Length: 116
Image 1 (cartoon, rainbow, N blue to C red):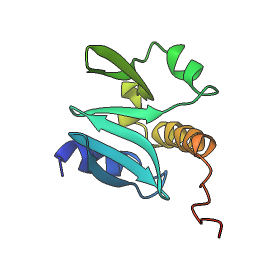
Image 2: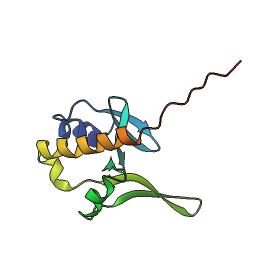
Image 3: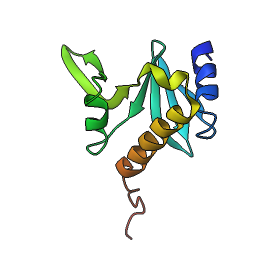
Image 4: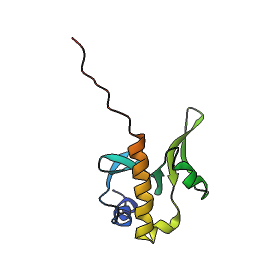
């Protein structure tokens, strides 16, 4: 695990335990089983939805994007402001909002049982 990801465990200590998982060349950050953040190239992005996206955009924070087959794909994660790294209470607030967005975005589990 990268030093940066280990550092994020400290940053979000007041929020609660986070569980990083390696994925797509970076890390997903999970809390209570839901992914609320991602790390790509040692840059932290937090989950947003329709409700929370304006909160990030008003602050000029970039949306996570990547290129696939010549197309730019934007994901529902945004960079965080630098001040969260020095202010545990601020970090907790951002994490709570992003975790709540992850809860709202959670897709209902489909019933996979077949009818007989």
